[in-house]
Length: 55
Image (tube, rainbow, N blue to C red; front, side, top):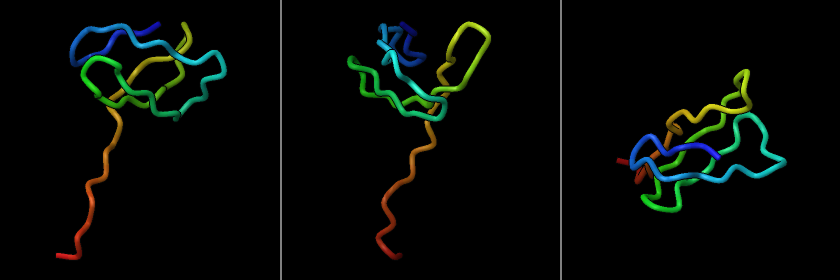
């Protein structure tokens, strides 16, 4: 389990989680990228790419 940095809700990490995988908070919908740490994984804000409408 990790805590959402946005709303402090608990985010369950899959048992087969991989570094670089994106997880989403079930409460606020924020997306985080998994980064390996000494205790398992840290959450860092995911780089979201907006849609490019060709403007």
